[in-house]
Amino acid sequence: MSIPIRPVLFLMSMALSQTTASAEALRDPTRPQTGVLHAQGAAKSGLAKPAPSLPQLQLVLIGPSRRYAVIDGQLLKTGEFFNGLQIAEILPQAVILRTVKGLRTLPLATLPGK
Image (cartoon, rainbow, N blue to C red):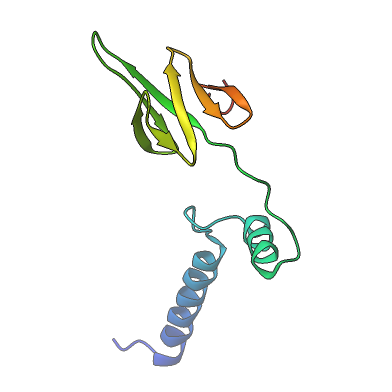
């Protein structure tokens, strides 16, 4: 029993085109959203000024004899400097920064939706 080749080729081409079409509809979850890319492109071209980002206190580690804070991914202890700001004191929920204008409290960052 022989199978006509043209109908088989037609069915195979249809199956492949459906697979390609469904693959194009999937979005890469690691790719930034379109609006984010547009905003970054505008900032690079000088059309829009990026908002100045404040440092984020991400973690406070307090032990019997040591206190550390993680600010923007950098591990710091009392007396050290971060972007020209001195760590004056590390508290359980905040860090006190010494600036040229005086002391400033940097609270512990919270997760979105919390």
